[in-house]
Length: 166
Image (cartoon, rainbow, N blue to C red; front, side, top):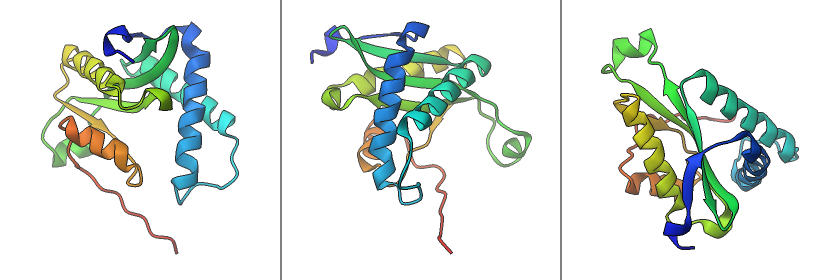
């Protein structure tokens, strides 16, 4: 798809059905490769939960959701909000105003066409307007393509959480 034909715009309530479908695709992509998730899930229920959470957090934490529209369809989204630095964090870290990227998703047929980059650029512009000094996001270690994508855009590994099964 030609990038010029993709429009990034603010989420509208009428986009909810498309976001839910993409969130379900996102869930179904991650679940089989995540070693700590239940094997049998209701991906629609999980997608509904995460979509509702993203919409709520964007509303209550000075955030926004952008969608990528192309070929008359919603083909990607990004949900972001501001994250307050806790008192404990401020004791240990330099003072920062954090923009938090909750989720970035582009439907499979459109991956690799620059849409994810456009969504992230739009989110970063939003954070600059909000006077953020840094942007943070989480990516699972098994999601190597996304991790490499973020690194290409200047993101660095900052915090690594480890887990062990007992």
